[in-house]
Image 1: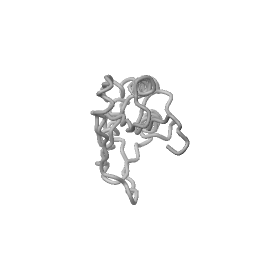
Image 2 (image 1 turned 90 degrees about the vertical axis):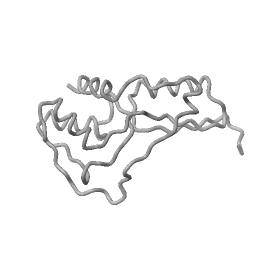
Image 3 (image 1 turned 30 degrees about the horizontal axis):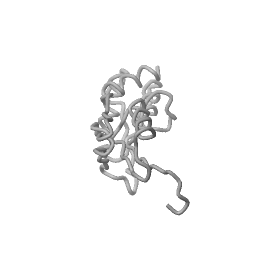
Length: 144
């Protein structure tokens, strides 16, 4: 407000898709499994995360830029909330490495779960189009 800039704030859950930097959990697990290496899961792996496919995020940004109101905050959320362990299990199974999971000590301050309410964005007409299952399938194909 001080400089009267036309700003809109967005907050987003975890984004995933092809071409993602390999330090992120989904591409990291895929590449490790493809090399026969275990997926390293922190603690018991029950920490839950919301994930949104990159194309859905791009659609949300486009809608916000063209129809959002200056000064507002828009959460870009997901209906898909999965545990890190479940992601590892799915990727291991899909790459022919079932059970290739190694547990490592949990991080000191690892959140169990966090989620965003994206109802304001939905009022603009946005909806998540890509399910986690479909997005994960696309990632597995892209990282082959």
